[in-house]
Amino acid sequence: MYAERRTGLAGAVSWTSVAPARRTTRVLPDGCVDLLWSSRAGLLVAGPDRTAYVSTSGPGERWVGLRFPPGVGPAVLGVPADELRDARVPLAALWGDRAVGALAGLAAEDPAAVLLAVAADRLAAAGGTDPVGARVAAAAATGTPVTAIAAEVGLAPRQLHRRCQHLFGYGPKTLTRILRLQRALALARAGTPLAGVAARCGYADQAHLTRDVRDLAGLPPTALLR
Image (cartoon, rainbow, N blue to C red; front, side, top):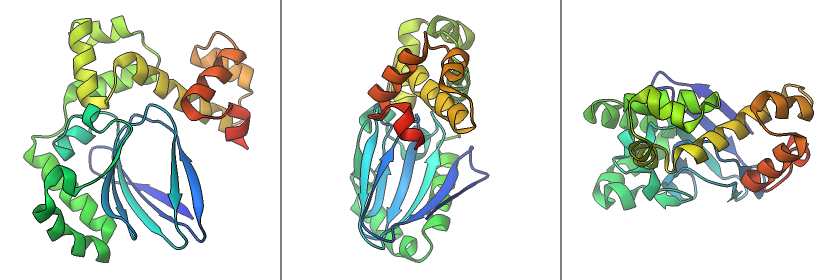
């Protein structure tokens, strides 16, 4: 049981999930950072992944999350994305026990509202999102070469790499590869044959698509689509 809705906060998506029985879920890399509440584990942060993360939920466990688009999470959390890469950490490890303790009771009553409110407050205090992040993510999502992205945002390649590490948790090449994965799977789920997906997304051929999806997601595209 999973549902999501868009919010008015910097493109963030609010989502909920309830596991009727013990369940494992394969979470694919997407360049995003999530602020989470679990009925079992409390308040957590999910950093940007380089490969699929397999999450296990207990029977009846309820999850509520606020997923920030690529590049937005650091402004909300106050932590560079590369410090959270491939990690799931308690929110208290970032903000301290006192600050998170005050949120915990409120979150248990209405986690979606609390996550959104605290994220909005912190984003406003930070002065909003980094505009470079949105521009880089938009260019990477269309498969723009890294050199062209650097020129578009007015940064030298090394500067772009450092900025991407902070905003996304990894360099622009990895970001582009991950966003291409997401684009490819969206096309495949919409009914585009895999050969056509490979051609439209810039893979050398279908075999290249299969290898790249397996490397990032842990399964070939045919298995993911099933």
